[in-house]
Image (tube, rainbow, N blue to C red; front, side):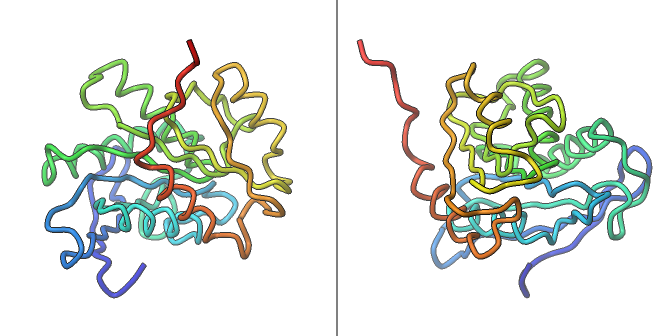
Length: 220
């Protein structure tokens, strides 16, 4: 992502996986505020960890003081294996989390994803909630949520959902249909397509401005 990005490999279930680590500015943050894992869009349609939205999410977490980590899914870049429709990818993201927890065992966890990556991260969160609730992410950031494309599990009430008004890959209506029963607010970026062309700055602005707010509570 920049000159300070550290690339590394971890052992996945079907081979080596290429990852990238970015650390928050030490002049701004005396110590990292948290750990964030970012998941990229669909590998079979050109998605990589260097996707502009994935990079924007990583930069956003850096601005919040989080250690930001991305991974190329199976078959992408130097990552070995073949696409596994979100199943193996979720396993691999769990392995990345385990690896990072070896270095940062106590930091709050955030999960961010774009498009297909939202499906992976939402599945990982559900797995963490079921197997070890104390280890689950404190918050999710889902951009271009893959509702209607993949069977998105429910998301926590404080999840930040961002979607483009003119997304023709994942229609806004599909995301609203998924979010409505959960009463999850969706931040709509007017005029934005699926890839947030010329709208990337809104992703960072929305997340940073929303991050420390508490979710709205029902009136008595």
